[in-house]
Length: 115
Length: 478
Image 1: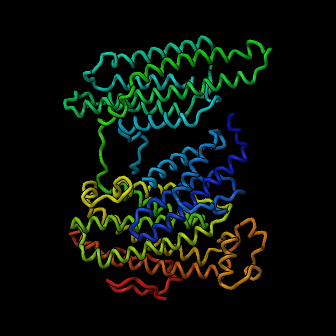
Image 2: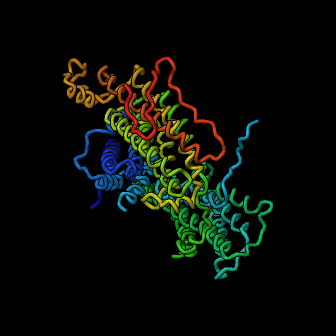
Image 3: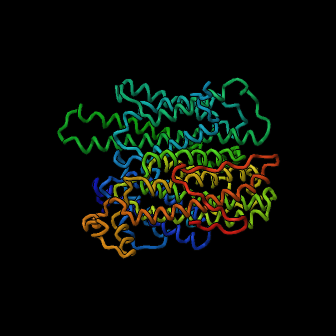
């Protein structure tokens, strides 16, 4: 059995979901960083997630919301992992040109957050 | 007179790294529709790689077979080109721009390698290792590139098979044998290049010469570019996502400044007492204020708004520059490691300039919050904040439909006033940070340097601000 191909609208919604996950992962990381103090490395990681969320949001059509609703998960690492799993379902075609950058950012962030 | 030049300024190593990266990226974004253009352009990549290979100084090979591999690959590529001409496929047409970019990188590297003064004989083991790494990089580029072209051709053949009917004419199905022939040749090419790469890639690449980041050039340039881009973007599109990213990046700059100054203080390049009792508290307050602003604007971002791509790029570069000099894997580098990478006094001066720029950007934030007529925010967030302040949605002029769809709505006065008050506090804290940075200038620059210039808000609306006394935490003055 093979995974059914995603329709264009599904793809856009998937990228919007990835943007939302990254947006809220950045928010949660910023909260954790604030708890740890102004010198926490998490501030730098949080900005990385924020930038990746902005990169993903740029690929989302204006009628889809890349910020809301908020995902139910709270752990930034878990949010990143979900985003990475979703990214695997995004096809490579003309409509998703530029998504490679998001995939690369996600992989880098996962390595950074997981170590 | 303009000092700009159109000549590619990258080194051979940077060009090879870029070509290899392009090949890997190609593999991610390839499909059957690219097959014809890729086959048209692939020969140029191989030819440019061959030119570069022959321009590199010779080294005593471990195996004589390795030296002949590139010649065989060039021969195979020429044979494939002749076969393509004979079969009239893929024929004339546009080239694949990505492969063309790879070929240009390799050709430029060949020109540099063969240029005047380059015909030197390497003598040290490190130079031999670096040359081996360059050859490995070229071969790896061809290996991955050939695979990418092969994937495109296979997909093209499969697509043709799927679209033609059982009784299709030879003319309709001729792309199948032509594609299969090209795929077979590419598979042979890939195997030969793969044989050279084998499992030695990481071992050989370990010998590649790497110039560690020295000097604060990248950090300085990244911070300057960030400052310019933030002003440009906020002047043209003062939207919540842009303000969110601007504030978030400023908060990260404050965090990184603390880490760099801490290292400078430990290394004795900045007065330890000044750092501990004046700079560190001021930067901590600065970081918290920017983070609070980022949080505010982040929750105000609404569905149709996006951050400016140029601002995203500039923020990314600041983060990368900080990572390069101040991080050791995923932790702050120790002062010793940081001191080995950069002149910490110079870095302290760069940080000081960032503090001055940050104070000015805080003024821009306040101006936008106070005066930008078209400022909008997420209907849900505004409704929630209004309810917290005891104002219902009707008075706040937010319709249930806007809240349901989370549309962008105009900021009510109450929210605007709260944002202005936050921005005023941000200005106070930023100016306090800038004021204590004066001490930094005395230490890091031994010669008598002029006091840092105070940033000016737009003159007509700026009230006098009380600067906290040195050693005291900055407080809001209004």
